[in-house]
Structures are given as C-alpha cells and as structure tokens.
Length: 129
Image 1 (spheres, rainbow, N blue to C red):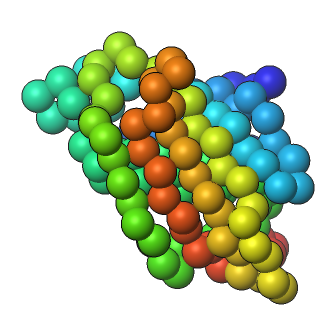
Image 2: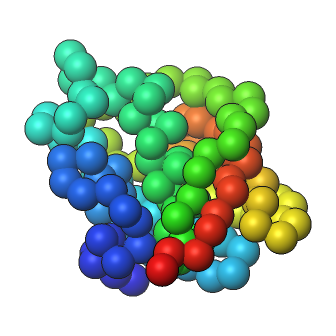
C-alpha cells in the first residue's frame, strides 16, 4: 500500500520499525518490516523482544492516524522466537475493544506463515494539533 511511513507514525529513522503499510482501516493495521544489520536494536544478528514490541506499537500507531498515542499497558507479550537479519515481519493489529480515546489492540507478528509473537496493547490517544 505505502512506504510513506512518516505520515503515520511519529518515530523517525533510525527508530522506524515499519517499512511498508499493507492495510489501514478503522479496526485494523497490517505492516511489514525487514530486519537489517543496521537496525538500531539488532544484537548479534537478532532483533530482541524490545524490537518486536516497538514494531507492535508502531503498527498500532498506524491505525491511530494523526493522533499522539501512549502505551498504557502491555498484556502478555509472548514470543516463540526472535527474528534474524533478513527476515520480514508481518504484523497485524486489530481493535479488540475501544471506549472514547482508550483502545485495546490485539497484535500478532509473523515471519512468513509462522506466528512468532503476540500481545495486547492498551493505547490512549489524543488529537495531534
């Protein structure tokens, strides 16, 4: 869909953990990110859990649009394995519940067809003026 990531998230290089936005709607965001050796969080060829978390948060930010968002809680972040350099993450964030400016987002991350991580993020947003 788009590679103009900077119109969707406040982070800037080298702290962007999304390369491509595949879909964005009122209830869903789908993104891709290829792990490279110059990625700021990569250590010994592996993207650590903090990188998976940042990718999940940025995918949620894509869905929020032009709003400032804050992570209020992280529920059950699980990773069955960590991605390696050269692997492409495909991350899907879906609204589980939304009340006013608080949203619970279920996030699942895949490498090819293998689910490697999941979490639920509570996101609070405010309009970006």
